[in-house]
Length: 77
Image (cartoon, rainbow, N blue to C red):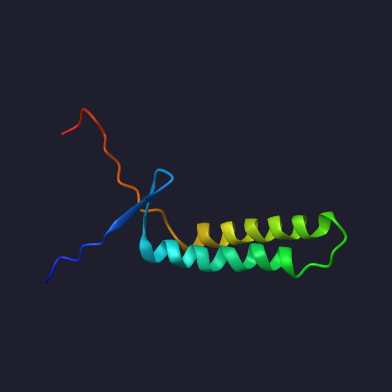
């Protein structure tokens, strides 16, 4: 059975796979920008809906994609 190696990326001191990063961007960006761009114009409403879209994207990504952390504990063998 061949060993499956996955390359990891470090983004803001968190370790992720490229696939998970692309999926999270594909989920969060349309929600945040869609909420901002397609909301009618009375001034604070697009900002509020865009931020709610970003929070919704964060929640979806937090539930669907688990972090890939590597823990290095010093002093233990």
